[in-house]
Image 1 (cartoon, one colour):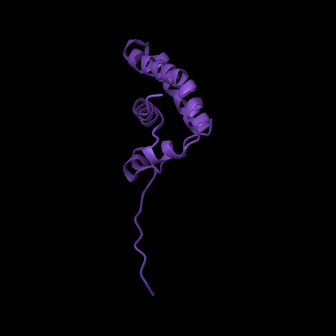
Image 2 (image 1 turned 90 degrees about the vertical axis):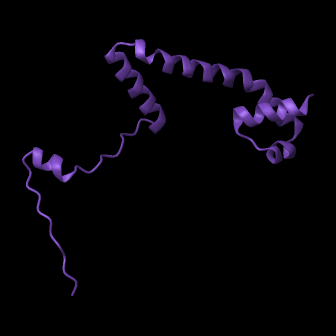
Image 3 (image 1 turned 90 degrees about the horizontal axis):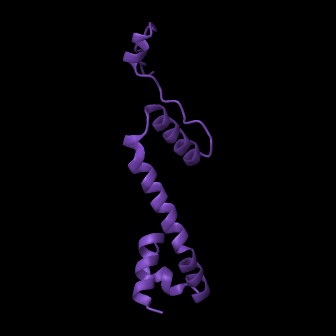
Length: 103
């Protein structure tokens, strides 16, 4: 086994450091290497999806991004951002700043 190549692949694809690799049992290293082609294929599919975005219809782009967002958040809705004073005013909601005095 070419340990230089193994370390290079595990570092690049899995983000493992040399020390982590050196301390791993050889069976674990083999398991990582056996699964590496699948990880590479997943990465290539993800890149193909990203590259195809400009060629998708606008609705398909939104659906793709929404699917990514659901996957990234586990389906939980993103937390709402507080509206700025300007947005509230545009909606007809009065905004008054109150300065608190210290007692």
